[in-house]
Length: 397
Ligand code: LMR
Image: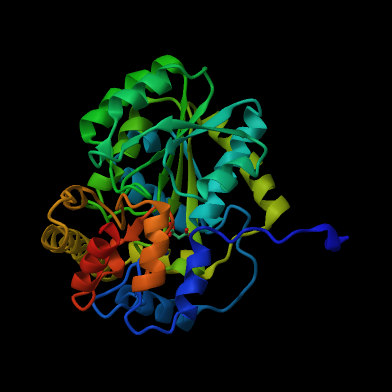
């Protein structure tokens, strides 16, 4: 049976990890996969995570199943973190949540719910978007289309073109948005732009599906959730998929959650009943440990304070690197303006190199980035930032 299978292409992001590991050059620079790195280049276990783990392990008496919807305490704590504790969705019981195996698992759960409710609807993703959005959405059988978003020449959003494209969509279609720290561009919607989108979504009966993988790594915990909170207050239905991989540093523990905001409590309960069946039919129940850690941190004042400080440290490091990189690139390539990098937020920016230039910088300078020239800013360090800027200058000629 399996002899008929041809080798599948490598994942555009994860494939780079293997290539980087295989490179023995000491100068190599990894700006590929989106993981936070500290000044030494490590992706550390956060202090608050270590303490939470110790507390959990000391009192854990059983490894019995949790539930298909996951850890209820975690789900509730995440609702408060994402929406803010005073949000109107709580009083009206308009929100239901299901823990997912990572942000990817949560994204897929939301897409499966759309397919069950409206199999004919199309999911629209930004141009460009995170490469894995495509299989996560289309793997359900839903159609995918793209809307214009990024203007590479200016390093900003082309909001006019985006709105014009959304205006033309049929009612009931789904629009996938990034809450903050847009992956791969780092170009986020401003508050005013989120506000302008509300009447458009309402008038056109579009379903917003918001992916939040970087809360607190852009401008701040509250600021990064602005669009979600606004849409949930103003629109009847919103899907929100959240990842705790980056802001809690829990990558391999696979911690995520899907929040389903509906017009009424009864509709929310029905949606959750379907989500539970979907989960049961794929993986039955999500893993426990990572969600238990997040629950412990968010429920304990001292741990939560420590997390807030550690998260702030990660954010400041990334934003500081953005400013330093612009200075280095200005010196190394004065003919080209990279100032947009300092305006953008989150782990990623697109350098604007061609695929050929990306391949050359990899082969000749041992600098690893995805083929679209996305760089993980957090992969830069005091020791390699100048080397990197010179490598860019060399490949640009
Ligand atoms: C990335 O974009 O590099 C990260 O979100 C990791 C991943 O799974 O792709």
